[in-house]
Structures are given as structure tokens and as C-alpha cells.
Length: 210
Image (cartoon, rainbow, N blue to C red; front, side):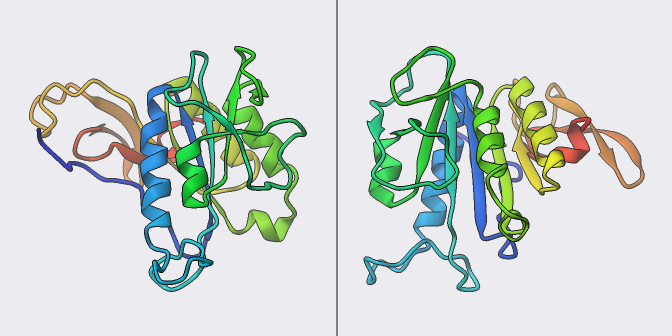
């Protein structure tokens, strides 16, 4: 096994309310990021919330979408999330234990899930926030390319920074074969970037049209 490789997510302290959006096989990276944020809470203070490296409290929200059964048994959430549509209560038990709120979305009719795409759930929640609250939001996403493109458009609509982790087949994973290249906009013009070493995380606005 080779790792870690490439460039990961970089939360910014100026945006202490990360919105994590995961779809399909993009769910585990979002759970990992949520765990990393939660791990920065002081273990000696059970009432503490996740904190970043300058002491500002993190308040992440994790939204996950799937059209097949989720790889865990969803449970009704005990963490209130104002702005989430009524009846959307399904959550991941692991994140509940960490004190990180989560909500699920699916068009498959799973109980307690938002009936629609996960980006539509994100739009509903973001639409409930005022300007000051939106100024604290940064979006992180991983999932199928159409979902990432929709997430980039969602971020643009609310004028939010957005980082996406791209899903590409990586033949060598060390940047030698260039089999995972994607077109990316750079300050000097379009360029082909290797997802395995130049990514997999990119600024959403450099990859997708919004």
C-alpha cells in the first residue's frame, strides 16, 4: 500500500463551519475529514466542540447521499440541525458518537432520508442561513463527477469556497503515467493536472464551470 499521496483537504480557520458533502464511494473521505476535525477537540473537556489550530470552534455538518443502501445502519439523529427540512432525521451513528451532525439523502425512499439529491439537501440548508452564517461556510465534497459539478454550482450560487476530491482511475499513483489527468484552470491558463499527485483535491472553481 502506498500513501498518503497527493494533496488533501485544507480547512481554513476563517471558515469555521465546514459543510461536508459525500456521495457513494465519496462518503468515507468525508467521514475521515469529520473525524480529523473532531479529533482536534480537547479530550479532557467532554463538552468541547471540534477546534482548529488557532482555537476557533469547528462546527461541521456532514451530508451524505446514496441511491443504494448506505454502508452503515442509519439511526435517527439526536443532534438538532436548524434549517434541515422537516422529517430528515437519518444520520450516521459513528458521527453521532463524535458529536458531528449528519444527514442522509436518497431518491430510493430510505426512511428518514431527504428525498432528492444530496446537493439539493445542501441547497435547502444553505438557503436557511443568513449572510453572516454563510460567511462562515466552506464546502468540501467527494463523490461522482456529476455530483461534484452540482456542488460547484451550489457553492457558486451562495458565493462559498469549495474544495472537491476528484474520482479518477490511478494507474501508477505516483504521477508517472499521466493516466489520471484532468483539465484545470490556472492563473497562467488551462493546464492538465494529475489527480494522483496534483490532487485529488482541487478548488472546485478551477475544475468545473459554474
